[in-house]
Length: 105
Length: 477
Image 1 (tube, each protein chain N blue to C red):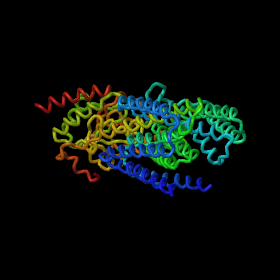
Image 2: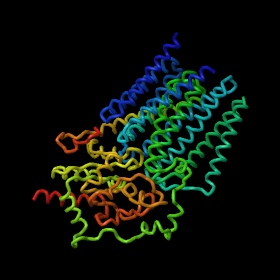
Image 3: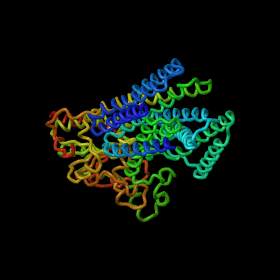
Image 4: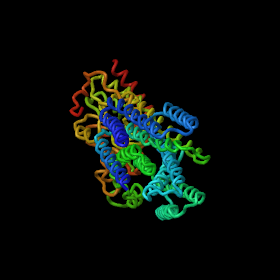
């Protein structure tokens, strides 16, 4: 029961911290943000890993293997595509541009 | 004592993850933020491996390699305009993983004493994961235009959804009572099947302009499913990461709903505001909106393109409002050419980005960044709206609903109350859209009838090409 309580507390704290952090992120970066959090959700690979900590029978092995493939697809694909995206964002090269008068920088 | 150490290690990993997300506050930081988050996940996998070991390393590593290569291969090939479909597809893959892990864990707990909450979490993970998968695949199909993007609604849609949900809950309750393995497996398969149907039914009636809400919501459910999966396998890292993703998805869903002035429930139930009024054009408030008279009246017998050219040359500060139509016409590179040309002529050019421009939150920013628009020229709606009344010229490219003044001026349309970019307040406006037809909302754009608006209809890419070359020759002489 204590374990359960701890898990609940972890969930609430993580949700709260996540909520606070993410509300500060500008909408400029919302697509890469979603793509990255999408990759983070593939942390289910940990679950798949724990399945293979024990000997598996055929059904478990097949399903577990598929879970690993899907989770890794999500994980690697998510981070790689986010990496591609965030590298696209560049600042003006010429500082003399009139755009320099932006108050919100 | 080792318990405390593992706990502290977990905390450190989570702090690294939080730090990574924090870096996303600026575009330069985001590069490191992504790598930092990736590092934290790698660490999480490493410590789990170290704590639990592997019974069949070869098989596991093979699966890891296949998944990674496939993910990497798809990720480097995806076009930026296809990002929303790609993200939806990946949500789906994540959903499958969660569902399968929960499935196996539920299978293993048969007959062994396990807390009811653990089992319940497993079932929630199973259902959410499978539903996320089905919904995401449908969303990916719609976003990539392989499926009809419009919403499809059955006659008794809500009834079907409710019945499905009730059956799933009853079956789940039944699994608690059964201790026979084969029977449980059968039941679980059946629950998976119904969950897939649930996901499909849920996602199919969301379409068109509401897709950004759906994709954000699926982001949240994917995270939530992972967190529940974490509860059944009793893994703190999985719970915390899942909860963070769920929080992120919830925020983005909320932002999207706010940007369209839609209530989440209405998006999901498929209710459009003012549906009835729209179908009755005799309604007084809408008679002006529905008036089909052509917009631009040529001044001094000039063609629209000549007037547009003149407006471009005489204006000093301009704002470009891009919409998804620009991306569909692949006109963003032409837009950038125009921007560079205008800046060479000493003009100030800014971009105004509506929150729902594109097919997912922030999509337009990525498309413009890809076309080499510096991000300090991209302005959010609230900031740029203050400047638009003082703007000499607004250039609208492939955007309709997000600049439709009907949203603020007319009651009872699907877009009424939706915050818009106030292009109509600028001194002059050029519209480069394919046609005069309404956008996704189906509401006629009253802006097109404003005498200060110059309409350049046709393929935006070609329109801009012509405009650029003429401007270039004028600039040279």
